[in-house]
Length: 259
Image (tube, rainbow, N blue to C red; front, side, top):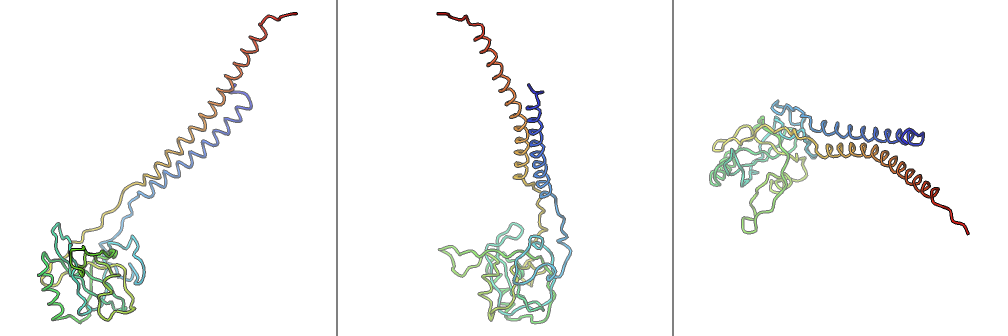
């Protein structure tokens, strides 16, 4: 039965379909491996901020966590207190300032960490009482801006818990339509009275794309099913022929009846 031209042609068709499914499975497996390849980034090599990101634009994944440097000045009076910030496992406060680059673009900068609110507020008062208006070179880690978060209903309505540039620009004095970065910088140094913010090297994601692996397994199953379907059709045809032959034998052996 399997050697009949009809079923040989069907077998070739099934093998062709199985080969196509196998190629699709191989492609999905390559995609899973490709997405899981670790792309080494030189995040600790300090780069100019303008080479990493541009104002008034989004932050790419490769830019997040990059050490950057830029020249500019601190904008006096635009310090803000950010609550519920961890530093090495300890809960405390960040002091965030408004920095204007020499290219006239604004960016939020996390200056340092304090273990309690009174210490952070004292540093803010000191920065505003004796402002540094000279041009400085800022170095730190560039991070994606955080999404604004509403304060707790029972808490202070003016409390900030996220470094959200979209919210900070509404608090900066005399800020209108200047260019602004959607990310922020964690300063590698800290003013007197604050601790340097713990900013570890970004972790590299080495996970495989399990969805592509699942699809690859599916295509292999489909390839096997194509060959199995051919085998099942041949078997059904053989059994049907055997049943018809047996039925004809019974009919031929039955005695004829006359009038």
